[in-house]
Image (tube, rainbow, N blue to C red; front, top):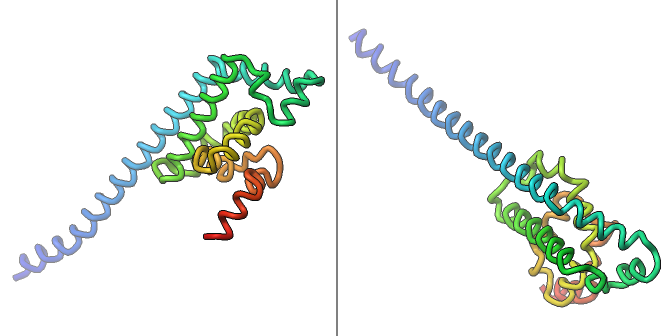
Amino acid sequence: MALDAVVAAVQIISLPVAALSIYLAHRSAKNAREIELELHLAENFRLRWEASWRRILSEIDSLSASGGSAASETRKGSAEQHLSGEQKEELFNMLNWLDWIGRLMQNRRIPGGMVTFSTLQPQLARIVCSSQVIVEAHTRAKGRTFWSGLLFLVDELNLEPHPGWLRNLDGPARQLSSSTN
């Protein structure tokens, strides 16, 4: 009889312990996957940044900072005309990479609070700032869904080139569509 009581007590105690160990193992595996993903994304960005993105952004910044017609045209919205083919291609590679990351975050495939993105915030903000005219033109022409991941990332990480940029991105068309919904 005492043996039956001991066996019953062990069974009662072992079930919650087993459930807790399964939960902790699952949580540990999830954390390991997230760390692996963060390291992979950080390394992927670093390789691209060191290979060409930093150089291209410096070239684009020097176009804008040189004053004269190139800078004024950049501010007016015809920036693409002043960029070389390589600069346009790399700028679109950057925007597509950010859009992809934003879409993954939007769909909760990667966690939004990753340390990697907070450490890369200055570089990401520089990419957005250098390409804001192109993003604005595409958004007006094709709608917000064209760069939805990028716009989500800009909002999530506070990468706006200037306050209110996201809100005013596509002007009256956005206000009309939001008032009809």
